Length: 169
Image 1 (cartoon, rainbow, N blue to C red):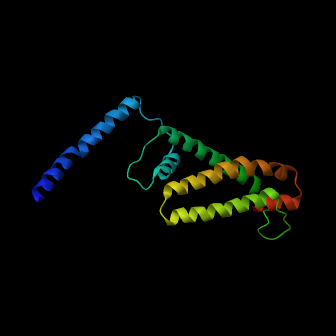
Image 2 (image 1 turned 90 degrees about the vertical axis):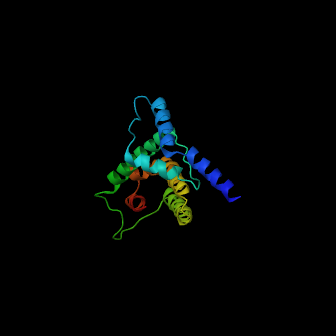
Image 3 (image 1 turned 180 degrees about the vertical axis):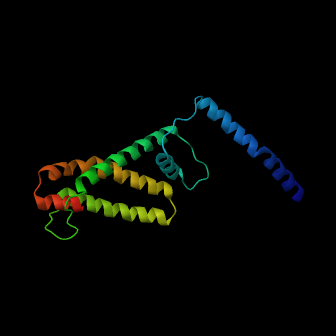
């Protein structure tokens, strides 16, 4: 019985030759991308790898996901610029002053708190794929698509207290 297992494992190891597997991947990659892989940026690559890091061992690489996360990083950059332009050199009510939170401010704070809770649960269980999806969903769907659009009238035409509340948020 023991010799049968030795033969089985010897055959299995011979079939799994790392160099042969690497060569197979290299050939397939060269066929799929004859001119090389277009650069997408380090941040989008890291985020893609985190999003694909499920509990299984295999990663099913998809260049479209990398392109999508590149767009996500670009959206995050633009949202950050918008926030900085509208908060730097302005009173954000961190040192007092009357502030009024709009419905949009209260909504995004509630969404943010839900996101932090889900994020912590996923991070505590080492589910980096879920962490990436949670952050992506909140940033793209709630913060950028809705909140930033809802606060533009307040930022440009709101009262001083409303603007302070929005900047504080």
